[in-house]
Length: 214
Image 1 (tube, rainbow, N blue to C red):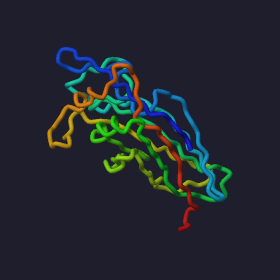
Image 2 (cartoon, helix red, strand yellow):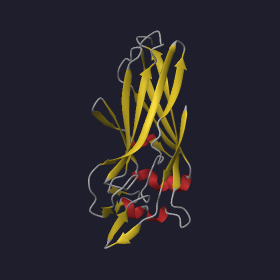
Image 3 (cartoon, rainbow, N blue to C red):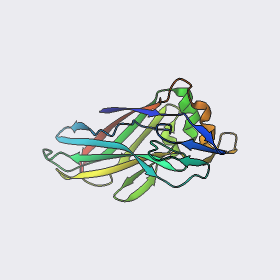
Image 4 (cartoon, rainbow, N blue to C red):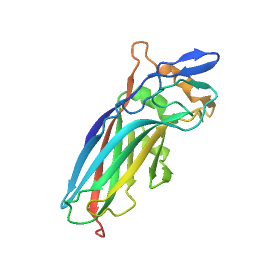
């Protein structure tokens, strides 16, 4: 099982009526490290590895309320997501083919901050070019939890890439039923003393079973 601290930087400034978000002042929902980590999972005669890479910043569109500066890292509501790639490999030492799930969980570091951000967090997975939105219910009051069905049988030595994107929309409907600008709503979550604050501590693991077995 692998741990990765999830952080966001919540400092923003106003410029010409727009939000100026750049450098280290975005909502970096995972960590700012690009290091790859590997986890080994064993179940009976099955052995799999999970190599995780990221996060990378992925453009998801433009937000007229935000001026994005060059080199901006992290989540920018309506403009930029963060992406992780998990590579699940059935070890060549395994005796049989396997099916299973990749399990991803995040424990909130601050329940107050998470409670405010939770309505605006969005997640999706992409496997073999097929994107699937993760239900909002994956973001429960206790944190983030989702199991990704591998969707195929992995023979010994086979690998599968699972892409996880986390984002926030430019606008959303809040709990009062009012349409709001997400970046503006989150301004109050910044700290005067900290440039970086934590959202989640992330964990990943896998559930494996021999292909064809109940």
